[in-house]
Length: 298
Image (cartoon, rainbow, N blue to C red; front, side, top):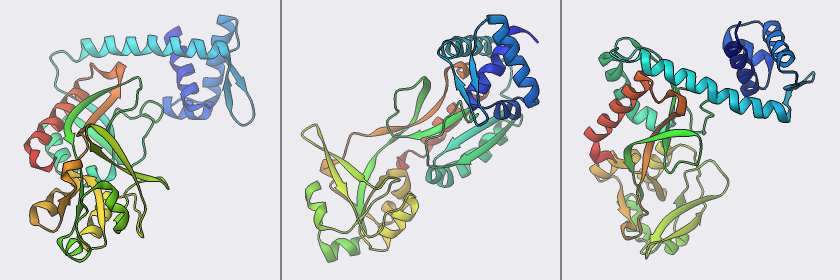
């Protein structure tokens, strides 16, 4: 094996923090992975990893080597993609992570159309509302809702994302309509979120207003929060794409529109070294086009 192969094995082992994980990802034996990294350490004359019976630890020199090696491997892959993708149709497997509600409500119609358009592409779609480690967990792209945290990933906005506060007409007739964000404290609220503390964000005179919320029902799925609001259990705060059909049918109506926060975006994100990938570019273009067609939902 050459130096690039040993670099790839080392980087994969650090990402997985185990020889076993690296071996599984690279379809190699654990013993072979261990031998190649030992050989790399001997060639460099330094210790890159500290082995224990439970896990690996990266030395200071190992961390420096890891960062440089990853950049080299990323550049090599980008160069290969830039050349090999020219003049070709998108092909290959695409591993995608997306939020649960976005996936079930939107991707269920988009992906079959995408696969029909690109018959040489296969997709492995995983729906999960947690923020996945794209590189560490082996995803090609992920769909992210809202503002992006600073990272080494490339993000492409494919649709606007507006949050709306809404409730059923029946609930508002019985409890009244809140006129300010602070008035929400006197209402039954339906928080949507993963943490124990949930805040709803509004805008007043160009400044954000954070309202801590709690309620009898807190869910980590937007469709369930929407259905609870339709049933008259309270007021909820959700992305438009989740509540658009209920708003259009009149089962929900919006409140506090004058305090709506600045719209964010729905993004497709992927590693920098994959920006030349033809299949990732095709998927991003297709999703952006589909969101534009379904513009009233955003």
